[in-house]
Length: 122
Image (cartoon, rainbow, N blue to C red; front, side, top):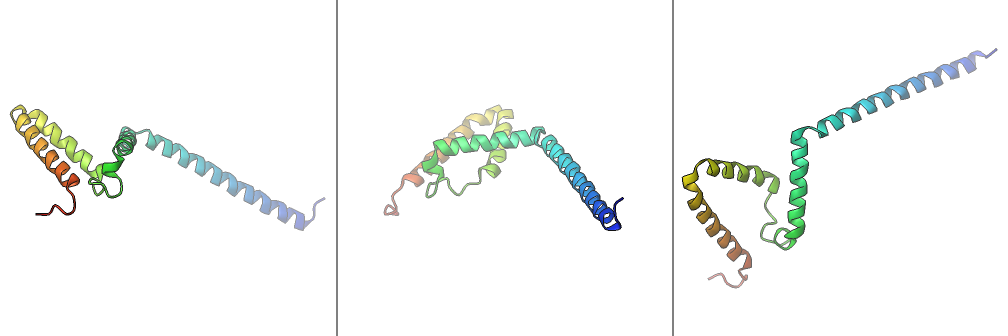
């Protein structure tokens, strides 16, 4: 027959195992909910945008990287604005050509500013 000390140790061990089981169940439930949230369309879209931005940054590293002309732009903020503007222009067909012309002029100005040498400030 077990003594009171051994019974107390067994009760403590049993309580510890019960707590570990509760923790395991909670962590499994949390992981399940994280997977469910990660499979939401909005989360998948954010992941796709992150992948696309990473690919563009890898290709255009000399423009986007340290010291590049586009290094101070937050692409995650700018992309929804650009998509909204493109959608708005798509609905107004008569503004499409003038908007493309203005965009080309702005792009040419940005390229000129990026490629300008520091001594050409006149």
